[in-house]
Amino acid sequence: MNKNCDFLVLGSGLAGLSFALQVAEYGKVILITKAELEETNTRYAQGGIASVTYEPDNIEKHVEDTIEAGDGLCDIDVVNMVVEEASVQIKALINWGINFDKLQNGQYDLNKEGGHTENRILHHQDNTGTEIMRALSKLVRENPDIEVLEQCFALDLITQHQLGRPVFRGKRDIECYGVYVLHRKTNSIHTILAKKTLLATGGNGYIYQTTTNPSIATGDGIAMAYRAKAYVEQTEFVQFHPTGLYHPGVRPSYLITEAIRGYGAILKTIDGKEFMHKYDRRGSLAPRDIVARAIDAELKTRGDDFVCLDCTHLEPEGLKKHFPNINKKCLSVGIDITKDFIPVIPSAHYICGGVSTDANGLTSILNLYAAGEVACTGLHGANRLASNSLLEAVVFAHRAARHASFSLAESEFKTGIPDWNDEGTSLPEEMILITQSTKELQQIMSNYVGIVRSNLRLKRALDRLEILYRETENLYNRSTVSVKLCELRNAINVAYLIIRQAQERRESRGLHYNLDYPHKYPE
Ligand code: FAD
Ligand code: SIN
Image (cartoon, rainbow, N blue to C red; front, side, top):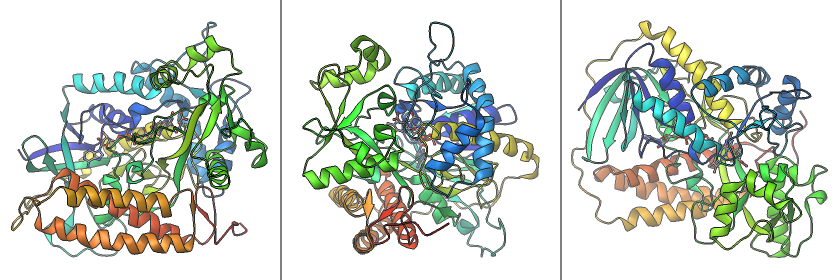
């Protein structure tokens, strides 16, 4: 089942689907996804998508809030560009049939989240991502120019490396020709060749023990790109969402959206004491890095397992109407949000760094684009402002689609690509080798490479990781490939990048807080 196409899309979240819908006007598209089309991080997005809509908000304020959250590492040109292009991309989403909530007067109902100085988050109830996936996946499935391949796992990008050719050290001298794909239902491996490839494989929260991300988020795209020698940067900036529902033994953590704090909920300790004012004048609505660190400090000082969100002072009917899914979820575990505190803990949520791109989403590899969480575009810097990631995904998918379509005629299919080579391999003897290593990896990352780090913790993490790396490479080289084994290998690759880049950053900045460097270097 080897295939050719003009545009190959890896991933079916907001970045992949919106790119596919746009390039389908210019050529044949194949979109592959390792699970069902709808199973993405995008689907679980709650708060919404940031964009300047009404006065008194304006472009300058959104730019300033993004830069302030990013703690000195945002690319200012990229921030200006994304914020300016937001409203056009929001219109595109609305034209594709996505419904954002409105007030009775017909104006959009705008949420507020941490780090935003204005109400500017367009949303659909408290499940914006589900609404995005509903509308876009229907359009993609109905489009005759898009072939959707579900349950297809991208194993590795095809570049000159697979041809055994030396690569010269110039600008964009590595080229992407397509991808090797493992079809999960038939267990067969196929070659898909493409003139243009988009990496839209999302993030890697699942490499941590406590995370809001679904199990697809194992960092496959970053690992594939890194193995293909793409430039990967700023992976040390892992964002922990302050308020995952505390529910021991349940993975992923159900998110309690930051918009609920924008609506008036207050963070308190178990015994009902407010604490955020000790850490930041913005209290419960300070940027996420500050809130997550404050909660971490409270838990360590007090020896508690969780802190609480208090909504009990808010008008009950309005609260339930605004957050119907959170209300339902909490009731299902015995919590009435109008009367009870909601127990919460910080959970790994988002990676700000990733595969480095230019303003058109082009990576350092020719004909390979990246958009969405897998990419590092310069927008987020050291800490992402809430609800800027869906915005980044749609803006960069649009720019990449435009660039890839206009330059399509310059690209050709590569011939002479060898089939996947699995000579001398056999089925792994025992699944336990993979599941145990996955658990160990998640523990290492949560215990040593979490919200607060130190040089000793990072060294320990790297030492432990090396053992897992050697064992896993050994297993990989003698085993028939399987999704679980490849995900583990990818997760180890990404963990390595996070730890190494964290070690290289000899300061505390944004989401990277190292006890040995309590302060930032002066700018
Ligand atoms: P995703 O939506 O994660 O899609 C990745 C796709 O790649 C999936 O289809 C997956 O199956 C596929 N894939 C991965 N690896 C492979 C492989 N090897 N082979 C084939 N396919 C592969 N951001 C906001 O801006 N606002 C919010 O309100 C918000 N809320 C959030 C709430 C939660 C609970 C979570 C987890 C995240 C939230 N975020 C939010 C972040 C945001 O949802 C994500 O960053 C964004 O949706 C990522 O979109 P994406 O298209 O890059 O990737
Ligand atoms: C949330 O709804 O709190 C998540 C928003 C985000 O991650 O941007």
